[in-house]
Image (cartoon, rainbow, N blue to C red):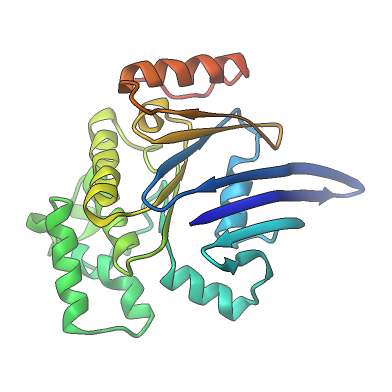
Length: 252
């Protein structure tokens, strides 16, 4: 599904070059829910921005299926973003002037795919994520958790190959955070969604199938949940992150 191979990225500030990603490699299989954690400055956000093609990598490969994202031109990148990638951001990025339902349909509207099937798909996603009762409300009239579930539904409207989530629980209380994670789990179980999430939130990460730990621009280790219960897996994550010296990891 997603393969990142020997990814490098550096930033030039004046005469100084800062290497952020130093040969990152990993794979995400179809239907997996994978998180990336690590200390501040480890390269998490840069990695996500390279995968989403918002910034170019310096070298390495980013394969989504058979498509090498790192070599696409702007027109091809825009097409991939709209058709093959879904995005969930920390700040929701819903349009205040649109209803919940219209916000969900927005990627198809932008892509010129307006149809009765689009409306049916939006209504189905509202049902899946338990937001049918608010679908005609505006973002100002709903809770943070409902906004984020709307954002998850919007990310899925085009049936993307991969959902990229950037700190999706970062601005939420524990109840709303759980609602968002439940939405991801529903998307995985009911829609076979593949989710790649960057997070500081150990609680959110503890629901994932695997967690990739970055430090200093390199993959230090990968923790696999397997048959481990969620609380034990979270404890394992916290121990690893503490050992790496990250004081910003969110705990319940």
